[in-house]
Amino acid sequence: MSNTSNTQDYAIVVHGGAGSPRDHDDGCRHAARRAVEELGISADALEAAIAAVVAMEDDGRFNAGSGAVSCLDGATVEMDAAIMDTRGRLGAVACVQGVKNPVLLARTVYGWIDDGMPLAQALERGVDLFDARVPVGLIAVSRTDAHAHSNQDMPNARIVAS
Image: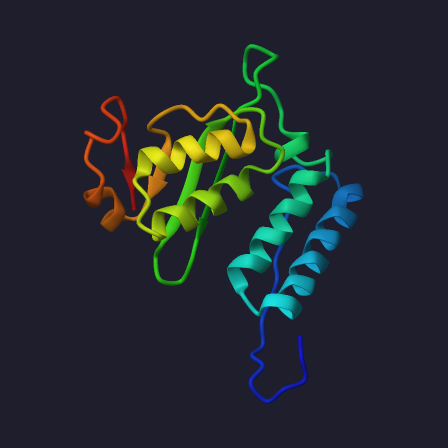
């Protein structure tokens, strides 16, 4: 945090999930430090939160990203991620596979939807960029964006709106 008169107090809270052993606390502290570093760079709370989540996704001890547990079949790993800003805009993905950092995929989709890119095109670009399998229709957007994208964009889709 800078020493200017415009600074605001803030708190960063990171947890490793229900039942995480105490020897994982260092991973939570590392994630919180990454958030503080990002705040110093961008002064953006959303980017700071994403930085913390990326740190946890990169730490194989947590049930996220590289540490995500498999589905009931014992082999498939599907992950969800969502971000939301104070204006109520959000981006989310569900059941993604083969993605190291699902929160970055949610962040990318969030940005494309805000730029007015058609939802189906955003999904296609996300799949190409992240070499991931994103099931059609498992994406959340703001209510405004959901109304802007009909099922003609994605005939088999179910758009979840906040």
